[in-house]
Image (cartoon, rainbow, N blue to C red; front, side, top):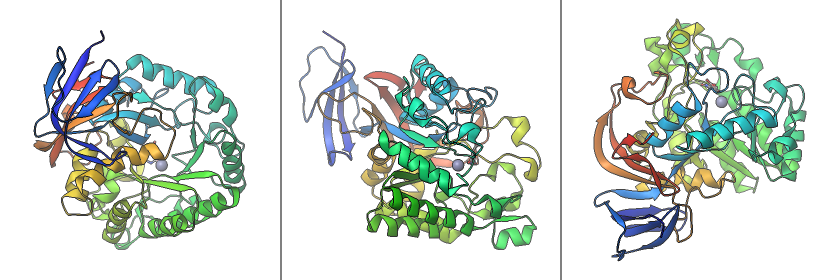
Length: 435
Ligand code: DOR
Ligand code: ZN
């Protein structure tokens, strides 16, 4: 008989099935065997989940793991560990590595390394254009048919500048039901930009990245999704106008999904007054009204998913003067706490809806077998157990990531991951990574 584990008396929040209530979850080896109150399971190892929330493992549609090429900033191993500690069982690393993940060889390597590490399922995103140079399409079919089974393509880090190429990508991707994920930025408007364009940039005298540079590309992308019938995903929405465009497109039936990053529902461009490059990110931190719009978008489902855009950078790259620093911030270990503090605390979303945006929501944007729930008999036991009341303080020195660039160092958060299980095996137990 395979190993049985009984998660006893937790509050099971399973957005995919709509379940919210105290239940036992019995695992048999890698799968869920039974769900219900007061289960009898002779011989099973019991894990007391009283007072805790049991939910599907979190799914992150947008991370940068830096391998291959910048293993000094992060590796698939350290990034997987940070993910598991953050409650994730699946992550989707972006292809802006060195070499770029624009062919079957690189995506297969990333997926294989992810399997070897075994802390989370790693679903690599393939590049849309060769070298992410925006000139010619990469071999999307070869990546889709490879052992990595790529189901999402993006030039993230850069926009797909040419409408013609995005159109082609959306058309080709239809053939294997894949998604094209765009980083919406009109580069002709952001060349040399250092931060969001607004009052603060004017005061600081830094070149601005206007909201319109995001919104015009979002509008273009939505028109092309409509034209082609292809599946479009919009990365890290950060402006009120972008949220409104997606809301209207969804209302008229465009096949589009969208994500937002925790920093875009938490921080504003006010933070840039410090000139601390830890606050530099692309798209940039916006204004209060944008933060409010992103929260509303998550609340009404216009934005399907919280995605971290976890972007580790080596200290010697990031801790330089503002204008020389690369954009990006860590996200994997703070996403849950920020979602609870900034979305659930002030009443934008109830806890089950917030969990939906971390689990079933992102899973719906992609094809990620076994992730996002439902937690039902026969399903792979990819689960997170969290303590919604636990207080902790973010300490960058204690994060599992190889990099240290979190803007939330010293911030007190409520809500912590206690256990994470991948196919029934603890990757995190009592807050400790198991590898
Ligand atoms: O802030 C960002 N960092 N935005 C991106 O689009 C790329 C990412 C990175 O790779 O560091
Ligand atoms: Zn991006």
